[in-house]
Image (tube, rainbow, N blue to C red; front, side, top):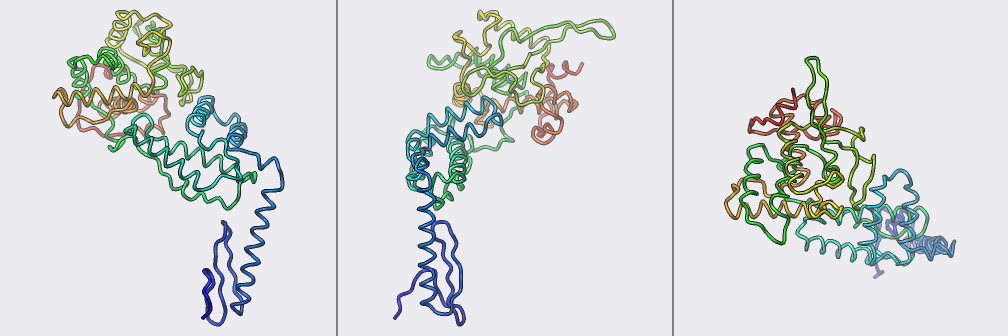
Length: 400
């Protein structure tokens, strides 16, 4: 009995060959089985010879490592990457690609990449999905870009199987839906009261500092990068002339962003207007300035720089303290069990928008201006429905 060969089978009165070899699909029909086997071997040898030729075309290519490809990839992106995007990816590569960074591209295998990604995922799981929750997604996104460049430049074998990389999905920070990541004004007052009643934790941020931070995020609706860049001098009061005279208006000047790598990046905000003013009301202005003055903040100090070392709190510190506060408050029955389990900095931005747009019926143009968005983006992203029709002096005064 003739030995069967995978990929060769009889089809009517002829022999069909259908096989995938090193990423190349081979398909043809021959009259006899012997002709099919012979031509298949010839095709396989032809593919192997082409791969060897491609690898040996340039000796310099053989010395290319993943680190070299990353440098070339960064240069290729050029001005299409903003400074904070470029520096974030540099930090990401330096911190997490070291196990495979010095491997030559021609020696890079599917197994080496797969094992490295498994290690990244296990580290992420150990962090409880908090500060590094999307790390596998971000790492593999960058990796796919690097391997795509390497494939185009023939730095690695075309037979390298990338299917497992494409199957990596983004891991969410929390299990609850984004639509649940907000609070109404009643919940906000409960949270403020709970923080004031919590016992101090010597290993965590002080309660009054976190109370100020939470109020600032809720009343301004700023992005976390924008909020971290705010200095005391950016909270201003100015006289505005009206038809009936003049009155004071209170603003937060937003014109810079504290980037992912913790340095100032001017004019790189997500909104089209790099210099915008976020309105606040008199009572909120007085509350903010009262805290800052009583805690010895100077005009040049960042308002989230509670240690006065010219560096505001890291994003991860803010996130972890928010998780700690809600969890501890529930344990002490300071917050109801129905209160959201996780409230992110972005959640306060949702809360501010929901309050202005959906509950108080603030015109969409005003809400968009405060948030630094276009009206179209506000309608597509930030339209949410809240069941509680609370009224807040903050938003009603903004409309005057």
